[in-house]
Image 1 (cartoon, each protein chain N blue to C red):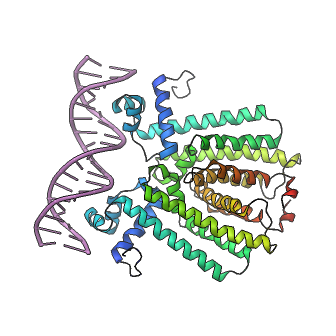
Image 2 (image 1 turned 180 degrees about the vertical axis):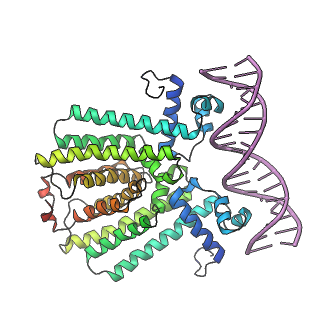
Image 3 (image 1 turned 45 degrees about the vertical axis):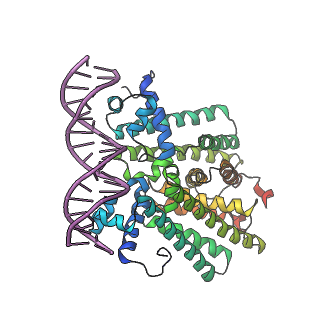
Amino acid sequence: MIEGSIVEDGTRSRILDVAERLVQTRGFNGFSYADIAEELGITKAALHYHFASKAALGQALIERYAARFAASLAAIDEREADVRAKLEAYVDLYGDVLRAERMCLCGMLAAEFRTLPEPMREAVSRFFDDNEAWLQGVLERGRADGTLRFSGPPREVARTIVSGLEGAMLVARPHHDVRRFQASTRWLIRSLTADRAGQA
Amino acid sequence: MIEGSIVEDGTRSRILDVAERLVQTRGFNGFSYADIAEELGITKAALHYHFASKAALGQALIERYAARFAASLAAIDEREADVRAKLEAYVDLYGDVLRAERMCLCGMLAAEFRTLPEPMREAVSRFFDDNEAWLQGVLERGRADGTLRFSGPPREVARTIVSGLEGAMLVARPHHDVRRFQASTRWLIRSLTADRAGQA
DNA sequence: GTCTATAACGAGATAGAC
DNA sequence: GTCTATCTCGTTATAGAC
C-alpha cells in the first residue's frame, strides 16, 4: 500500500503540504488544483497523477493530519506525567495551529461538511471521535486522582473541550488575535481544575 | 436607502432566504447563483439584477442576519428579567439554528474568512463584537447582583461563551447531533452560575 | 424591472505524447 | 512519472431585447 508506506514520495508530500495549508486557511471549497500547481511550479495534470481527484486529495489530507495528531497525543502521553500538564499540552496543539494563522483542518472541514464526499465525512467524524476518546481518558484519570473536578460524564466534558477549542480558533480568525484564543482556553482549563475555588 | 427600507421587495427577500440557508449549510464558497436561481425558478441574470455581485449578496446576507440577531437580543432584554434566563435564552438562539440543521451564518463565514471580500469581513467581525458586547453587559449585571460567579474580565468570558457556542455548533455538524450541543452548552452555563458548588 | 443570450473565465478531469 | 494539449462543465458577470 502506498498510503501507509513509510517512504513518502517527495512531490506527493509537498503537494499535501500546500493543500493542507490552503484548506486550513481558505477551506476545501476555497482553493483549486491551479493554486497548488502554481505554487509548486508543476502542472495541474501532474497533480492529477498524484491524486486522481480532489476528493482523493482531501481524504489523504485528513488521514495524514489525523495520523500526526494521534502521534502528538502519544507524545504527550509519554512526555507529560500529570493530568494538568497533559491538558495544557493538548491546548497548545491547537494554539500552535492558530499561531500559524490556520484553522484546524477538521474544524474547517466540519463547517463545509455538507459539501464533502462521503469518505471525507467519515474521516472527519473519526478525527473528532479519536480526540474525544483521548481526552476522556485524561479526564477520567484526573478525576480519579483528584487533579480535576467536574460534573457529568467525562465523554461529554471531553466534547465540550474539543468544541471549545475549535470555536476559539474559529472566532479568533476574524480578529486574527491569538490572545483571544488563549484567554478562552485558559478559562476552559481552569474551570476543570480542582483548585478553582480561588477564582471568584 | 433600499437596504434599510421597512418594505422589503418580495423577490429580494426570497433570494436572501435561499442564499442564507445555502451559506449556513454549505458555506459561501459552496453554492452558486445557479443553485438559488433553480430553487426560485428564476434565471441567474435575474439574480444579478437584485444583487450585482456575489459579494454584494453576501454583504446583504450578513447585514440582515445581524439585524435579526440584534432584534432577538433586544427581545430577550424585554422578555427576560433575570440574568440566568437571559443567558439560557441566548443559548437557545444558537440551539434553534442548529435544530434547523444550520451553522451560524457568521461562524461559517469566520471559517471562510480569508476568502471573503473586505466588506464582508468587516461585517462578520462586527457581528461577533456586538454579540460579545451584549453578553458582557449581561455578565456584568450577573456578577453585580450575585447571580453569576466567574473570574477574569467580563469581556473575555463573553468571548469564551461566544466561541464555545460557535464551536459546539461546528462540531455537532459532523455528528448531526443536537444533544452534543446541548450537553456542551449546559456545562458552559453551569460553570458560570454561582450555585455550581453542587456539581462536583 | 425582468428576461434571453452569451461572454469570459476557471474549475476538475482526461488522453496520449514523451 | 511527468508533461502538453484539450475537454467539458460550471462559475460570475454583462449586453441588450422586451
